[in-house]
Length: 129
Image (cartoon, rainbow, N blue to C red; front, side, top):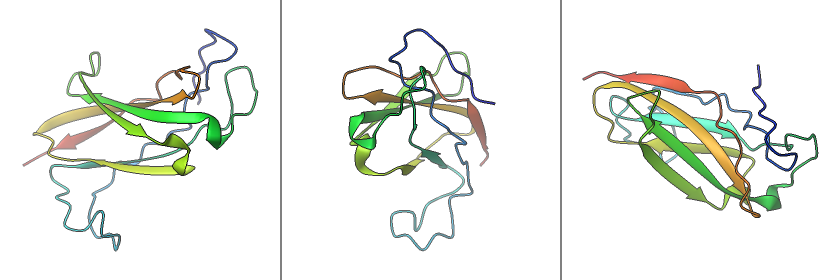
């Protein structure tokens, strides 16, 4: 189910996220080789295709993704900004060096005009040592 908040007709629809939390191992991609799956979470998502009002949004209009995460689902206190959101329609990012506990993640996208989407659906991953 996709949550859409209509605060402005120009806002970007929430990212169609199915953040993928994987074991983070076994990839043939050198970016992820040697990744310690016990302390990392691999996030995977697709770029939004439309704004809240139903207008399409082109990849060239996307500016950056913002990953918010933390161990308190009600107060995500860490943030990673990924510039060049228009680079690829399918994104993968690995959050590394996570301490033991349950970690919660959401992703937002900002367009080139500074408009920010609502957060994606929250997902979680438990890190055990």
